[in-house]
Length: 216
Image 1 (cartoon, rainbow, N blue to C red):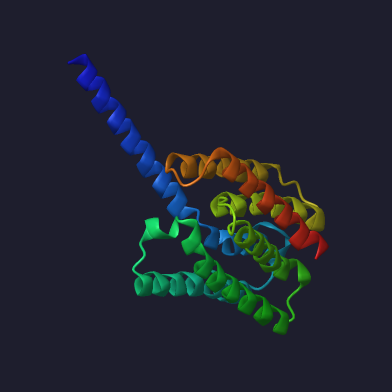
Image 2 (spheres, rainbow, N blue to C red):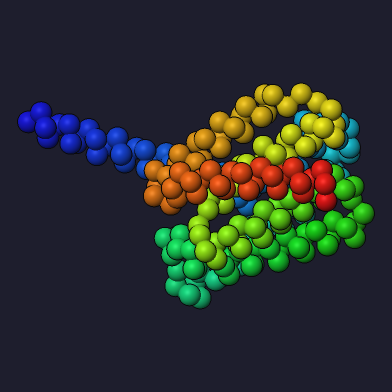
């Protein structure tokens, strides 16, 4: 009787862990990185003095190019090829979604350049593009975590903007480091990645966040 109760307890605990992990992975998707980055810049740095209407227009534009367009095109790709969420977890099936996402980001960058936006704003898209291209190249031979790469890019980007705008990033830095740990743990619990894939993903994203914003 006691063994049956223990088995039931462990099954319930595992279901809870899987549910929490799926929720974290679904909420903090790689698509949200540019939107969250622009939001933080517009409302938590010196850029908050910019007109609200201008900030909302830019946020809407970034959301359309970096979230709506990639997700819609990937949805169409899934429907045409009969792929589910598990199908996209296979390395070979990720290349077309990567290409579709990269094209959307390139279109966003071109639009931002035509609007003559400051370099420190378009740097977010540049950093994300570099990260996606590197992840795509690596995925030809190996699978790394793009979720953790995205959160690593947030950490690197935050450090970069702390140099540009000279502010103390400790509180936000702590938040994104904790978020990185939660994401990495979630991806491993779901069986999507190993520890080394998670660690390499963070390293790639971290350096892309620094290089794309500060040096390119």
